Image 1 (cartoon, rainbow, N blue to C red):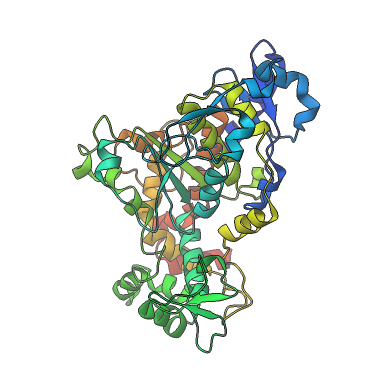
Image 2: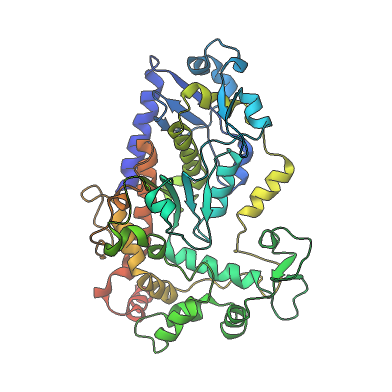
Length: 453
């Protein structure tokens, strides 16, 4: 399995870093407050060898305890001597030191060259916050993708896309929209298009504010489905008499209405194979989030995103010394930014407002029906995994005639990053493998056999 390979590779990488003292390297403990972004513990960053050799160790090491090793990158120079390119606003790029980089609000990269497909309820808020916190300049598409000429023909060359298990993301979207839309006799402040109130981002304040538009979606979630995702999920089973109607209703729920394949359409639809020119997107970076046993049931989303930051830094010509100083002088999050980071994750798991106290858990029948409903998404995930390197996972076929970018979504960083990304994708398939095995019969039969065992 990828997870076992991942553990072996990680151990070898750590051992190699410890003995390869002839190579320039730097160890920097990642700002501890960033662990608040999604609740996962973030260790330090390790930059070894060339600027593109980016990896991380699993144990926490304080930067100041390794000042001597850090000098391999920073050397004996005064920090202010090393200059870093600064792009701010529409002004002409200038050269600044690391302290000025943060004080002047500098950005790394050109906004048009990096794009982020922010898939709703897939950890995208966290990814977006970290990219911004590390001053990466990027353009975002949300809540839907945009396959425009800038992406297909340039100047966009790097595309990031966050990936979460399709069933988990559907349930999260269902519960989130049920929470965010105003219920009957809701006492929260009501926000709707056309009404001006002193609120910048109502979706960051769901305990205080609700959306009072989207009447059709609200009626579906609150009145017809009674906040219970099982009612819609189980109706999506292929043998359900309400399947076609349920499929139509899914399209009414924001974030749930677009499948993973919808976001990847420009690289998986055979009709679109020739629309990406050599000047268009060249790197497709998957930012995965998946709870795995070897990760103490926590996603490595934060670390994956931080590795993307380092990749973008290096792609924009920064060397190890410049990157090391940017990280060294990065200010800690203020209390206001910590609060914003926590809100960015806007969890839909619990709420003390409206009718949702604790969302109703998804039953096994609903899980099976959803897995089969999103079968093409799981086929896409399997297509992202390299043939011959992984176990036989889930009885679903790979997609055919896809753009090579699909097969390399995890190949943009260190080997450790690659193995972690692939392990996440493999885990998504393993968790749904039983339900994706249609030879076992209908979902009702599969669940009945589970109950009997």
